[in-house]
Image (tube, rainbow, N blue to C red):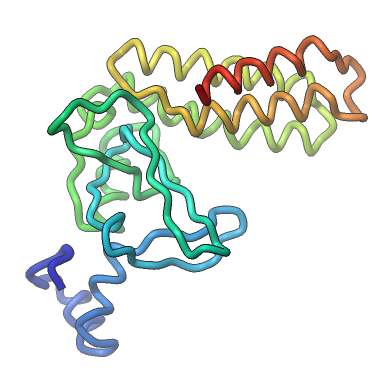
Amino acid sequence: TSLHPQVIDDPSDLFFSKRFGPGAIHFKYNCMVLNEDPPKGGAVFITASRLNHACLPNCSRYYIADQKLCIISADADIAAGEEMTISYSNEFFETAEEQAEHLLAGWGISCTCLACSDTSLCKKLFEVNKMDKEIYELSQSDREPEAYLVGENLINTLNEIKRAGGPNCSMMRSRTYNDMFNVAVSRTNPTSTLNEARRSMVRNLENKE
């Protein structure tokens, strides 16, 4: 009950709480998706649900289903006393105004992270997530060489975000390098090369280290 929100003042939230019980409103605002693809429900965690949101967080999270365990890993160097943050949402918008409306409607929060205070970074974050989906769509259409190039552009954009003071986004980098490896060695790829596959794997290992 010490989770957000402490005071329920929104009429729809008040109705929701009365209908389903006081714990329901805490679940609504603090639950995490257990598995993104496909979605497999949500859960509230004793510790992880207390982490605050940032559109450009310094930590990533993932769920190990068979152990019912939520893992939080650093995506950047975190100084002693610095707050650890995660992203509550997998949806990103082109403008800070749209992003703010999305977060306020979904979690009742107003984000003041680096991306929300810098319009160019907000747009780059939107482009990163758009390219992340585009890699999959192109590979499913047997357009692997194009998907590989999108992966390169995605990594370049992540580098720009990092140079602007953002985190390393290690989880996104790892997934992108893995996607690039897969499209490089796909049997339907007419220009499949072991060099591209090897380079993607090496870069992924360097990123993990």
